[in-house]
Image 1: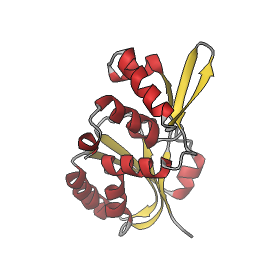
Image 2: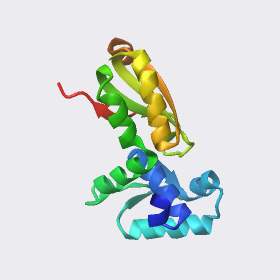
Image 3: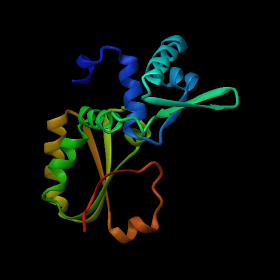
Length: 174
């Protein structure tokens, strides 16, 4: 979907990197190494996205760090588009609605860091029907054509653990 709308694979990777997790930041050479592309093509896309106001750059010594501009008027829409591209919205709809007493859903692992590895790792918090969860995960995987790994913690366990780079994608409304 996104690859027909945006023809630059480098730009798609950058949108995934910066708009999957708003806390994600990177610098030119790091992106070139991560994406396996030349610094010139990375610089070109960084300049275009920065000029449009989608990215903010800050100097950090001799390097320039880039991150998503969360104050940009289109930030919520771009983030939503990226989540739809990754299939996050379908996963949430399929799994959350009938699962039990779900308190929160987090994306962890590569996607939370802004990397598209093809495997989505979910951390679900609450008291859940595990057999039903397995069925829903299987159905969601076929819907989005991606592998989904699910971890489950009770609310008390989650509060005592620190999960690095956990990206909240759904929270119960009490």
